[in-house]
Amino acid sequence: MNFFVCVTTIKKYEVALEMLITSLPNEWKHQYILVYQNENENSFKIFEDGHIEVFITNNLSDYGNYVGINMLLENKIVPDNSWFLFIHDTCKFNVNSAELTYKIIEEHNNSDIDILWLCDNGQCNICLIRKNAIIYGNKIYKDINYMSKMDTVACE
Image (cartoon, rainbow, N blue to C red; front, side, top):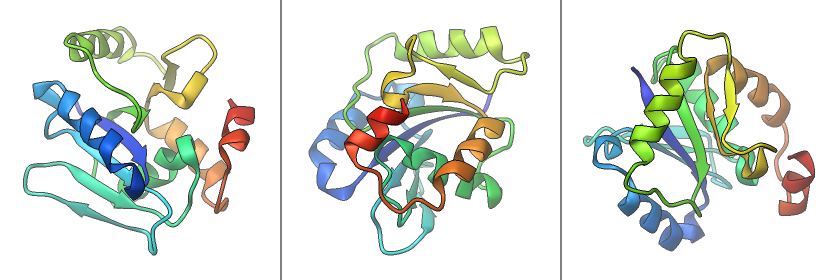
């Protein structure tokens, strides 16, 4: 199974981001993608340990993952059949996070579902998501340069 943890962030949140990366389950230590927003250009870099960093000019709070991961899909950096766990830099993982995540994916892997919200109301945009939903989200957000926290909450 192709799986990536995708974290949307900005550089000034490095303390929270480091706490999140430290909490990653061992099996995900090389399967994560950081989407840095509010950058000077759109680009990406693949590191020797396997993690990827994406840089986008947009500043979309929780929605930056759509633009950043779409860039990787378009450039064939990640496989089209991948599952992505969209989170943001204020999250932290528990000891059974990988097991629970893989169980959810297994239950839906052969379905045509492209997005699974991990809470009943889609709060905080934490979800398991696949290519079709990312493409759809990218079409909505790619031309928006900035969203305030209130804008993102209203979109939830």
